[in-house]
Each structure stands twice: as structure tokens, then as C-alpha cells.
Image 1 (tube, one colour):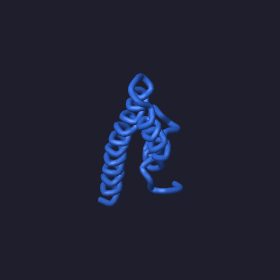
Image 2 (spheres, one colour; image 1 turned 90 degrees about the horizontal axis):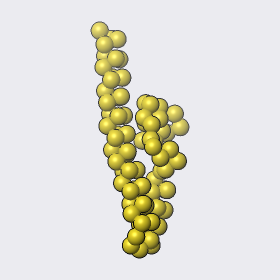
Image 3 (cartoon, one colour; image 1 turned 90 degrees about the vertical axis):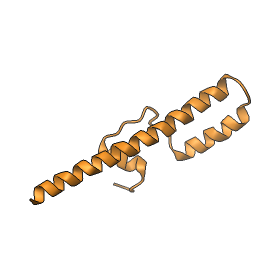
Image 4 (cartoon, one colour; image 1 turned 120 degrees about the vertical axis):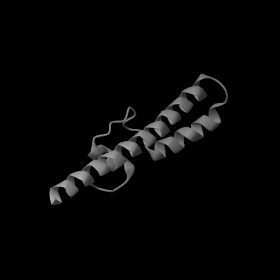
Length: 80
């Protein structure tokens, strides 16, 4: 595993995102685009993307936490 960042660990643990190529840098760029978009459909579409990205971050964190707990239990069971 190249790093212990959420995106790397979630992939290792089997979490799948709906926005596979979306990441932290992309979300910053999209946020700037949202600021510049003004009112209308494009602004709402960008906001929906950002909300989905943030929601999936929360889901991924929970997934990883549960996966780690499961791995820990398996290790502990193996030592008994």
C-alpha cells in the first residue's frame, strides 16, 4: 500500500466509490468552480457532486473502521 491515506486504505478494504476519479484536489477545484458558477443548474450540479463526494468520504471512513475492527478481531481470535 503506497500510503495510509483514506483513498488508499478504502480501496484495499474493498470500498467502491461512485466518483472513482474524484479526490481532494478535484473537490477543491470543483468548489472554486462552484463559487464562480453563480446561480443556476451548473452551480447545483457542482454542489451535488461535492455533497456526494463528502458523503462517500464519511461512508468510506465507516467502512474502513469496521474493516479494521474485523481484522483486529480475526487476529485476536487467532492468538487464543
